[in-house]
Length: 116
Image 1 (cartoon, rainbow, N blue to C red):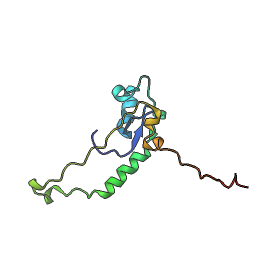
Image 2: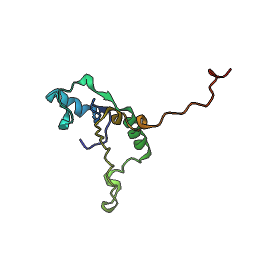
Image 3: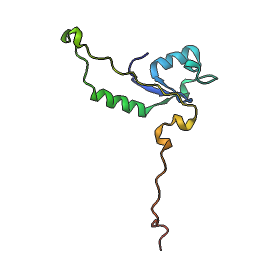
Image 4: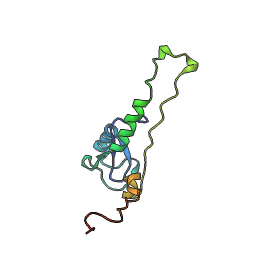
């Protein structure tokens, strides 16, 4: 829709769409939008993209609301809001996002369970 997503939902292939337009697509087509994966797509296959939702909410809280049209001169019109990127990933680990690629924490050299 090119609007800021309200309820980001992720397909099993890792692509994120806004929930309501995606539900309408699935109900009318039963397939993946944009053909990113073969096979059917069902509503039960979707998962909320909470990380993206939190980013959008933080961004919305930080950006001042647009001024009313009457309050802004034509040469002072605010810039349009930046589009929220949709990420397409090929592998499940890439679809999980940056957190899955972090190196695991190292354990201390001596743990209480091993010391005598």
